[in-house]
Amino acid sequence: MTTPRHSVSVAGVVVREDGRILAIQRADNGTWEPPGGVLELDESPQAGTRREVQEETGLLVQVEQLTGVYKNMARGVVSLVFRCSPVGGSEQTSAESQAVSWLTPDEARERMNATFAIRVLDALSADGPYVRTHDGQKLIAAE
Image (cartoon, rainbow, N blue to C red):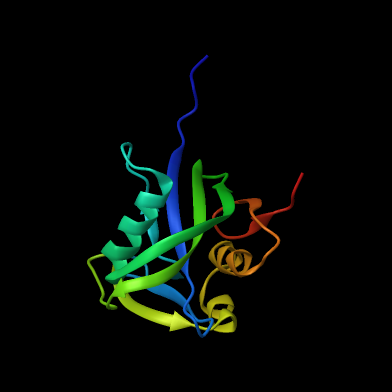
């Protein structure tokens, strides 16, 4: 039996004191998402989250809490999402982000596809962490 191959990614839902959420507009496809990316083999999920947020937005963050685990069933990608607080740096775009913006929860829901908007909403909830599956575009009902 062959062991299945999965990719692990991390994302930071960075929440400002006024309740706005940090989001990037991706340079490759124009979609809005929380900053994040593939976890390196030699780094912890928290370190990967800090690195990805800084690379994509210029901000330094404190990783506070795991708020959800999400699996893209079509691609075999498992994403760990953490609520974070900004602690330094300044907003800037990168090769991966064509825009960086602070969105209200309603704006995040409107701009992001369902699989990313739910990550933001879950991170704002005190009831997590959540475990969800999706097909890349929409959530799949829990078993």
